[in-house]
Image 1 (cartoon, rainbow, N blue to C red):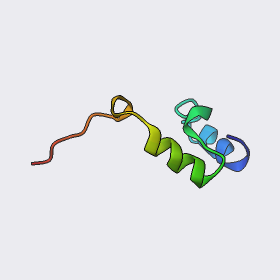
Image 2: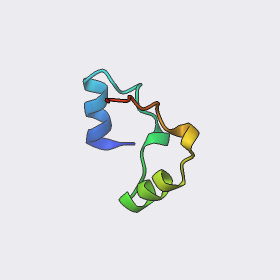
Image 3: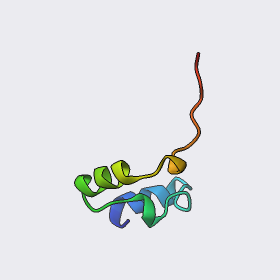
Image 4: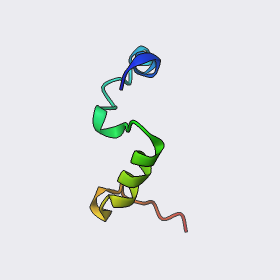
Length: 49
């Protein structure tokens, strides 16, 4: 991550929350990573029923 987005995250105090493993150079690579993730990687779901 670089440039104005990184600067804004740091300025808002959340720069440490996001590391480079959470950013992808293209939308296609992000979608591929999303599709290839395992179920264990998903955050717990809240049942709203």
